[in-house]
Amino acid sequence: MDTTLWFRRLTALFWLALTGLILLDALTAHRYRPEPPPIALGSGQAPSGGHCSGR
Image 1 (cartoon, one colour):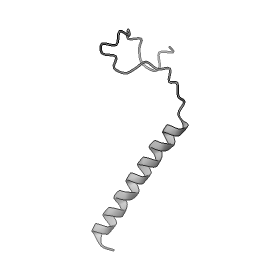
Image 2 (cartoon, rainbow, N blue to C red):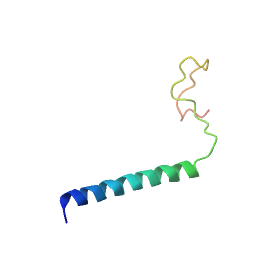
Image 3 (cartoon, rainbow, N blue to C red):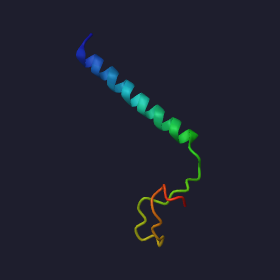
């Protein structure tokens, strides 16, 4: 097998797997996420801790 062909197939397999996992995560995620935004520059929101603060 030619190394260029092998590399292209491996690269395509990687991107297909990555895209599939992202789609799977997006389709199974809940619409409401209780954690605060990671960056709230100028939004008027006070920082309340990270996603594990219980709020």
